[in-house]
Length: 123
Image (cartoon, rainbow, N blue to C red; front, side, top):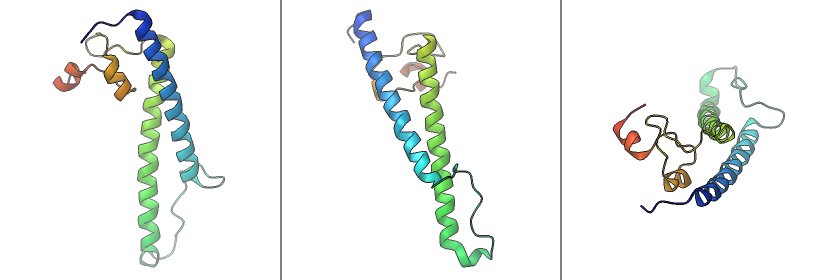
C-alpha cells in the first residue's frame, strides 16, 4: 500500500467527516420517522387488551423497537467517530495506536481498530 501524504490524508478525512455527518442526518430522520408524530420512539405497546387480539400489531411493535435500538446504536457510533475527529483522535487504532488505513475508514467510518487488531480480536 503506497504511503499517502499528510495533505492527502487530511483531504480524505474531510470527505469522511462529510460522510459521517450525512449518515448522522439520515439516522436522525429514520429515528424521527419511527417515533411517529410527537413521539420519542420509546412509547409503551399501544395494546393493553388481550395479546391475542393484537398479535400482528405486537409483532410490528417489536420489530419497530428492535429497529430503533439498532439505529440508536449506529447513531452512537457515528457521534462517537465525529467526537474523535473533533478531539484529533480519529483514524488511530485504539488497540495498537497505528494509523487505520484510509480505505478501511472510507468503508467503515466509525472503525476504531486497524484490520490486524480487529482480526486478532484485540481491544
